[in-house]
Image 1 (cartoon, chains in turn yellow, orange):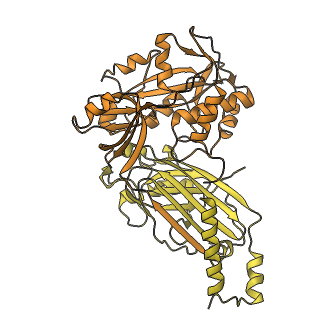
Image 2 (cartoon, chains in turn cyan, red):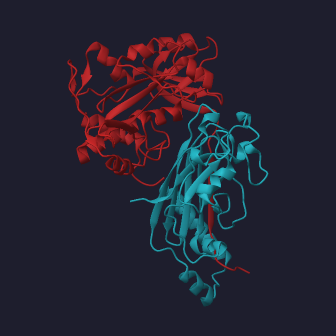
Image 3 (cartoon, rainbow over the protein chains, first blue to last red):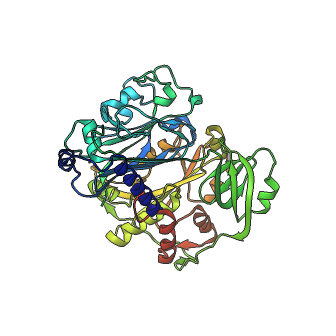
Length: 208
Length: 271
């Protein structure tokens, strides 16, 4: 399976090269070489349940971020039973929220309360990792997500020279529409509250 | 003009909501089917009930709908699932003393548990490998804590499991007493007290009734939400706990069995 993935990746890579016509200037090449990850490595986050009392299912999953040469590959595998759009983002913070973040005491850690621990979004883990603008997210109960982006492209978009993923936080959102959430559950961007409610969270750590 | 060379590869596998699950039939109750994997499936009336009762002990493949109700039976394999012959079964309950470690050591232990479990893996398999590894690599004897959910709790909450299990480590409390912490790496981010662990699973936050007889749960009184059993790290499944009432006890790990369980529950490489 991994071999198939790498072959497809190489084929996309070669397409990308040919689309550029092989006419990169030496300046562009130098710029790319300056922004490179420091060796292949893998970060792993175990996604653990948040707000799991909204259904009879306890969601969980894993996110893996790999630096492979010039490529950053992001994968998530999630177990859930709510067939909704699952928004997933990587955040700047270093911890997942706990019930102590439920500042309004309604029994739920909503998107606004969550940000106290997770801080702002670093980038959405969506259909287009090369843009910080939200693309499409996965719909489904259990899902497998895989996407990749060139390191220099992401750094350019983030306006950073390097990216240390150790301790960064992955949050997945989205519970049943029938979850009967109270009006005290807040959202940051006008989404339906069931889609914005955090349902799983994990902290990335370097994998041995 | 191409500002930078970029490559994006995107692949989504959105798994269908109609789920195919498999397992060995442990019990068929009035509206519930229990599998050895811990999963429950809701039965729609008496449809398939006689067929499933006749297949008790056999492995089945089931098509389950989005409400966790049985839609159809794909396959019944009348040959019971392979049972490893435990090499360390004895007829007299052996003494077992869990190792007592510091709370700091429990956190270190938690963080070295193998995190590379498969997306679809059973709690009993994960718990067994984690306990085995700690014993073999660090000489720490843990216990297992099993929680059994009653039919009334399962039905009321449309809960998807009838039992859950995790390793349990004994810790020295600051007041000099010996406490216990659950090591459930998949669902918690640190060692937690038993009540914190069950609160994650039992939405009513009611404490689970402690018992040392599986049959007390199995007769399934509707007055409780859940039952709990604690025993040595050598017990892998509820059926092994039930065996104790027939004077069949576990007193060690079966390396061959653990090897098979590890292959089922853990991956060697990346996602």
